[in-house]
Image 1 (cartoon, rainbow over the protein chains, first blue to last red):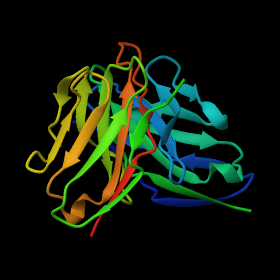
Image 2 (cartoon, chains in turn yellow, brown):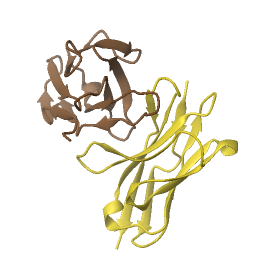
Image 3 (tube, helix red, strand yellow):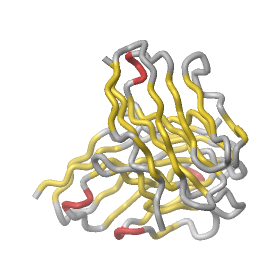
Length: 113
Length: 115
C-alpha cells in the first residue's frame, strides 16, 4: 500500500523568502504524485501533479516540485512566498491504475510580514 | 464550470444521533469519493464510487457509516449512530477517472461536530 510522509508539521517563512516543503512516499512502482493546498474553510485545490516525464513540474501560483526517484521524494518549492500562500499543504500519492489518493498529514505554512 | 457542491457546511449533533451529508459532483465526472479529514490529519478515503458502483470501501466503518450513489450522480453519506471520534470534515471529491487523469476536484467540505 502506498503512503506519504510529510516530515514538517509547521513551517514559518517571511514574505518574499523561499519555501520548500518536503514529501516522501512509499510505493512499489513509480506513482502519480500530487500537491494540494487547503486554505482555511476551503476544499483542497490541486497545485501540481507528476505522472511521468520531466521530473521538475510547474504548477499554479508559482509553485514547482521535483520528483527524485532515488530519494522517493517529491518536494514542493516556491522562490518567493506571498502572504496569500499561508495555508495547509498536502502531498498525495496515487496508484497508476486506481487514482485512489493517499494523503500525507499536511504541512501548515505561516507567512510573516 | 460549477464545482463540487456539498451540504450542509456545518452540523452539530449529539453522540448516538444520525447525520447525512450530500454531495453533487462536477457534471460528467464518473468517479466520486468521500474523504474524512480529522483535525490535524490528512484526508482519509472512506469510499470511492465509479458511476453508481462501489470501487473501494475498505476504510468505511460499515457498522455506522453508509453511502450511496443511486443514479450515478449525487451521493449521500450517512452516519448512524455518531460517535465523538466522528468529529471531522467530510470532503467529497470527483474526477473524470480517465486513463490520463488523476486530478480530484474537492468540495468545501461538511464539518461535523459530535458532542
